Image 1: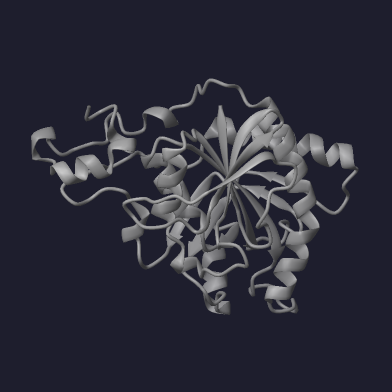
Image 2 (image 1 turned 180 degrees about the vertical axis):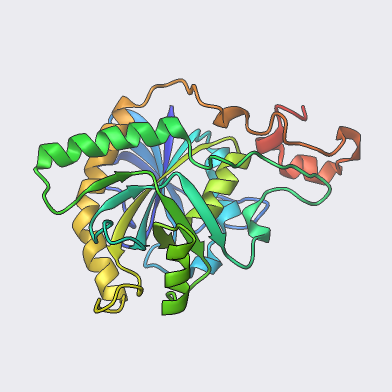
Length: 292
């Protein structure tokens, strides 16, 4: 069993890894955000990638999500846990709380990089439930136990919620923030939805650990969101996130029982003989078991 971890703002290293190896990966979609670091954690293989690159060099819209997820697939990763900073759209979701979203609302403008398909091969994956229920349940249990063990009073855990994914890099206008609340959004960020879509296409389980850093800008009298505010609250929870990962990797079952591993079974529409050879070769790690 191998677990992939994508670190967001403020999380550029994964402490506790042993036998570390930095891997420079090449993919048909270009280079990933940075070198992928493979190592051992809790006796299991873990692969870590900083989403924005070391030193936080990449805008949300500059992240090559296809290359990132494809690289994880090449390394045999079956589960990916994403860690990211989000703004809160609800009074009850306070800064330093943790939300495990189970739904997404897409407000991005450039979605061509959110799929592996095209170039002569069409696929439509089911995405009604975009997060792996088994991986999210395991994550919820481990965070609960970690909070209880640490006696944490300033962090609350929320199981479920709708993540509004916006383009960025600017934060929301006040009008946008209010409209997202009316649409039923709970938290807002700029990076998680493309990862969830691509993981589903790659038949990789995906779950997100969203760490609330601010109230966006809808809340009257609240200080406007700033980078300093985000980083300060994210750093406060980073130790908790790392402690959770160490236990999660040790408790995940080796065999998957969810439907993520067969997401493409009924999704590939194009007749086999009509798919260009170059496309079949490019996507072999993803479609190989259906197009041998």
